[in-house]
Image (tube, rainbow, N blue to C red; front, side, top):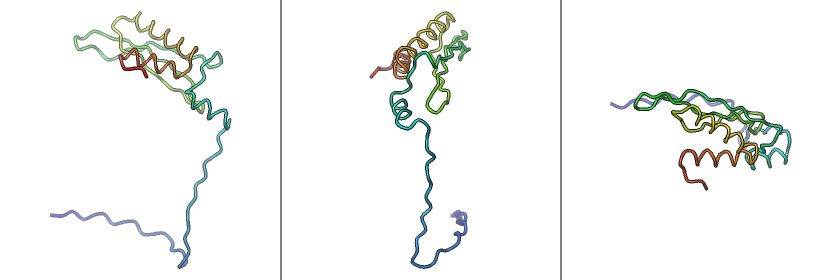
Length: 128
């Protein structure tokens, strides 16, 4: 048996013959102009004015049942949004705290780009 397709919605009002109506959407202007675009391309600026917040949170348990913790860092992103990046799960909480400190230092000294490279190296990924 074949299933019937649901009927298409009825078309809107028909324009006069020979005319074409095009709906145009306009993008709202963003604050900052070229400066904001440059900061977005650079992946965040880091620096003293945006101090990241680091937390140590419980992570998923290991296969053997051991508790694990991981560092998470909240950084200010483009448009005032907050980005959260996570470190690897650690069985020893002190190691997670050390990860958090190094993540904060990487962001303050090199911005989001350096933080992402550190995160990739912590995961054992190839850093490009």
